[in-house]
Image (cartoon, rainbow, N blue to C red; front, side, top):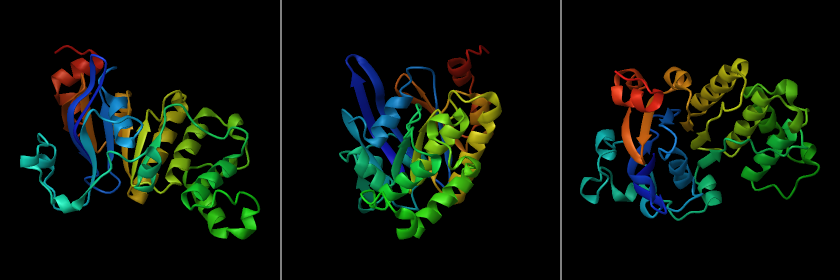
Length: 274
């Protein structure tokens, strides 16, 4: 499990995350959506989990314990209520983003980051080589590393990019660019993949294809996805769990049905007065 424990981060007088304790990875392939109004602390939380920001206080942990009680885990997070064996945890709070990738915590950004003049196939090849420590051997790979090419072909197929494999990235439709970006993240062999609005900027006709593909692959691979999303239709349709933030604190957590039953959450997210 990936655990945020009593995380605090402020920017000047703004408390972006205020004593946040939350856990991800209850089940392999779990899809968790992080929701909340603008300024709730969603992106700050993701940045803390992935090492782009250092917390002012608190920890980021990887916990390997199948017997953890979830209600206890997401309680106040104090030492007195720690519901797991301390020997089962790995503190990654001080690890760089690169070292967290090796630990299985991978990030995909809202703004797509691709090698624009390379083809989709070449982009994926670069990611696979990086994961396998072969990036310095960037030429003549088709014959020298057939297992790399097999992995690339598998990613192209699973992310529905086979017909676009030899198209230059900068010429791809936006939905395919998003899929390629996420496929490159999957090439890094994540256990936890954090996504920042993966359907942002995608046309209405492509939105379902993008999120459906991500859902299919992550569940097949048992990868826990932690997704910031503002489209409540997507959250309701695909979430296994929802974590709602407000003013840097956890407002609530639970099944997607809470978006319909929590009147205060509906007011915060949708401006719906009851």
